[in-house]
Length: 213
Image (cartoon, rainbow, N blue to C red; front, side, top):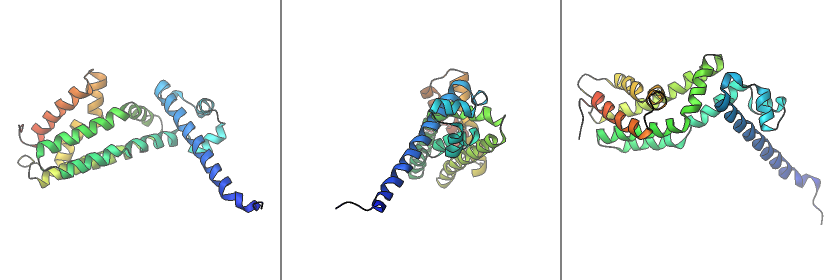
């Protein structure tokens, strides 16, 4: 018995969705390579289309323009599982020093994975208003995660005398924000391990009222 024509519709719809997802992934991968190689300002949508083997209208229809593509790539970093894993470790910790170490290690992993892309965003923010909004949003989410760390230390009554949770968040942003990792690793040539270990000591000293052994 032959199947009715309508029976093929779910298959065809599923295949179209799969093909669209593959095209989108190819465009995002191509854009990432080009942004990293040339910098945001020197990449055009035509370049992305050529690199991904698609047409310019397809790029816009699938992912939007350059700023939208960059926002999506940054969003992947913000949604990386390491973020939730780190915050879970922080909430589970009952030792202030271990809390600081867990937070610093998780932040280090996230920065190590996405620091180059983040620098693309920082550069793009000076050229594109949408990219600037993406950077502002990324920094907000970053600081919210650090506020969880400050809150845990406050719950453990571990913050130095007179240090509020808000001020502790600011101090964590100063030491563990992306600008700090870029300074020591990219500008000063420190290894990621050395930077992580040093920052654990500095954050502990600044927040816990002295080093805890």
